[in-house]
Amino acid sequence: MTRIQLGKRMSITPQSLADIERSETEGKIRLETLERAADALDCEVVYFLLPRDRLEQRVMNRAREIAAKQIRAISHTMAMEDQAVPDKELNERIDRFIRESLDERDLWES
Image (cartoon, rainbow, N blue to C red):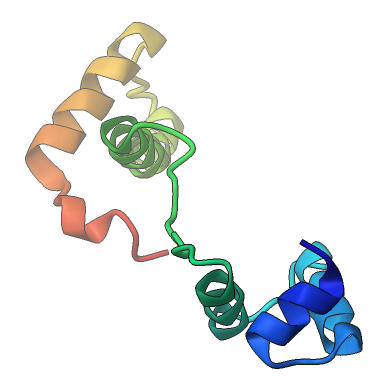
């Protein structure tokens, strides 16, 4: 389909269609504009967010990040008092902290 033909279907000028195409390539197109183009082409716009990781993995990574930060702060204080925790126990403490102290709703606060 030519730009003129699509422009007619959308009731816009070829120049306006060129502007729309440019905004799309620049990542600045409006969803409303995409919907108008889709209607003119007898298509549907599908707009969604696709996680980069599995959701369960993302939740666990964030929980470990928060827990590790907390545990390291505690471990630092204990080391200063000559009560350091061996590194091999660190992962166990992180896992326990996640189970006992973290709520999934609090993972995204900061």
